Image (tube, rainbow over all chains, first blue to last red; front, side, top):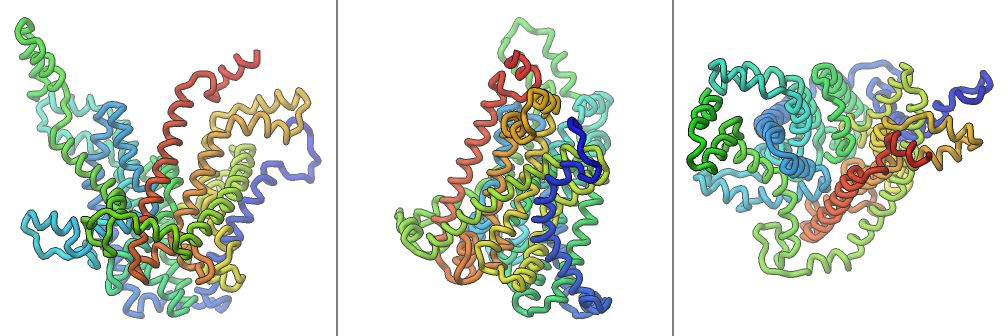
Length: 288
Length: 304
């Protein structure tokens, strides 16, 4: 802009982007492309690996189980995260920062330390089991079961629900709620008819983000769950390292990736608060 | 309904117990329900407890994963710091994370500057979201694809393989933090320094870099932690000769039941929490100190 540059020279901004494009394209983009290329028969243009996903009898079952687990986790995080995010909007600045630190805690700490903590809690005769025993639930087995995995995954994913919710709830004018109450609406009706619709953007963003991330979980189900109830990520890993079915793994990976990106794109359109998510995900993306 | 009426009911009698009236007036205006506080506290415990529980576990005498820990002992720590496999993987993790963070910081900062110069163009906006894709892609998809390609490129189980994969993963984080730091950057400074005869490189070092240093530093810390913590890709590209700390921790649960993981976990939890708390406090103090905020007025005033 300042000095005139020769016409054939590209804008210097493009040169600064070369290292990033080369690194991400070469180390992540090329493998992903190769994996996709293998899944369509390395140039044979076949869809057999994709049709095999739907006919082998295993993949569909695991997909359904993963979707179900992710849905349960999403509901649990929404039910726990909504009141928490609401409380964050109601307390003073000091307590708000305490609550924010608590939410961010799972982000800072290593994924394995956290999963190990859950392993201790869920172990047979562990803390959670004895806590439930106090209420008369004596025979709940959590280690190696889907319930235990759900409990742990919900904790890991709670921040992804709370932060978009908080940014949506923080922008709602509470006077509307008080106005509804002063006009004679019972508290619950006022909440449902006035407050909740205004928070819908944050809810949609949080739900889709949580669901998407839950679908890709690998470490938590592998450590806490049982091999008999594996989720889609474990199936993908198993096809790759044990069965060496690279083409089949490519097809499955492509399917998971496409579903993820469609959901994220959708959340982006519906939510409008993806800026927060970007920052949040920016601190956490890989620690699943 | 009642909550709104209460203050007006209480108001006509101000002469009597002033404390009670004031307390009731403040409370009834728009109270935070008690159940909300209780639920919030429970959720907060749910968020924090599973992480903190590894700390008491690390002082256990027993070699099982059963809570509560039995006795007090430092033998798990002694194990950690004397066993070659734990020490090697710790060292590997440090080397990989340092190299990956260095590469990611340079590459990510450069990309953020490039995108900043090109801002407003449609192709730049597309490229920005394209460079963010590793954050949103499930890590298992990346891990399996990278593993198969690395097999062919002979990068499995090598330092270079780990560093390249982690640097690529961490670059978007640096890009995000530096981009947000550049949001408050005023490009007229660059014109000023150019008009005073500084080369673009010198302008970058003496003008741009100091102003965006916080974003760069945050990005570097995030990149280091991302790599240090990364499990899924590390699990796939490991080899018996070269593996990182998270892989060793994973093995100690899945393959061999090695309670040393408790010591390793609590060391990581405490160290990383301290780093983040110091960073939080530092940034809080710096924003509250006048003159150092990179807003235009303070800099202009100083240069006058």
